[in-house]
Amino acid sequence: MTGRIRVSLPVVVVVVVVVAALGSTLAACGVSTYKDDDGRNKSVSVNSPVGNLSVKASSDTPPDTGLPVHAGARIVRDTDHDNANVNIDAGFFGVKVAVARYEDDAAPEAILEYYRKELARYGGVTECRGNLDFKPSGPRCKARAHDETSLGVGGERDNHVVSVKPRGNGSEFTLIHVQTRS
Image (tube, rainbow, N blue to C red; front, top):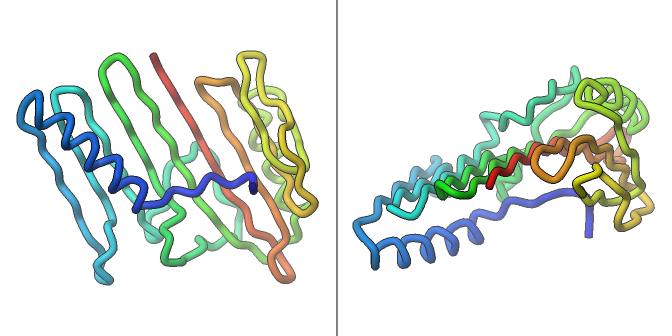
């Protein structure tokens, strides 16, 4: 398992169908989808009496992770739409997740150094070889990986993660921001 959160639109579609089915038993439910030029879902919105779900996946519009993008970085464009803003608002519960994946000609250490400084404005930065787990006391190292380094700051309700690994002669990195409320 890598330190990257993958946002898969087929999974989102299943969630949308379940929410739509449940919501329709209570009252009318609104579902909107917008597709890109290749016919892939670019955004999905579900509005129901129980809550709302929206997913915006686009390689052209980077998600708002709250972190600046390293100069020279380019969005990784592939068919999976790894870049997305997901928002679930159920009145009593909510979660927002923003995930953006980039590639850069800079070495992994240069990317890590840049994001250590950027993340420090949110608090103490934890660095792990592999995945992070967020507890009320803050991030802690979880699974180990030989080629991926994760930086994290925050707690269970609001956290930022930067995951960096080598890619060719440069780097690939993922910026993640997760916010929850209950």
